[in-house]
Image 1: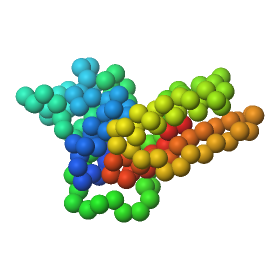
Image 2: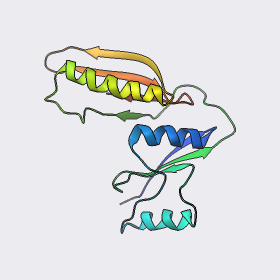
Image 3: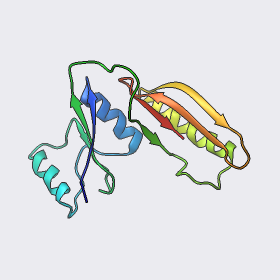
Length: 145
């Protein structure tokens, strides 16, 4: 199996790390665990209390994020983006419930520095959906559904 992390270019890595920590529930400290990558990042952390530019799933199950300092600003549309699912992709939820849960998360993310780009609703009774396209504090697109 190949280990991987998601690397995101950033002008202000600390600001993006703070935003995405709030959005995902990730932490700037690697989890305790037996996996070699846990040990690798704990060793890299050294005596510091936390990373300023890296985030980790506290359960150690999902890939870490690294916010890499770059001099240039974002140019054009993202070719890759994150989709956040505060609904847990629960197909038993009705459209009104989905909208309520998604909008609560969207409001939280706006408070943390994101911007709403657009909202899209599909009310097909066999496949209702609702998602919100957003920008993080540096303009990277992501969706909440």
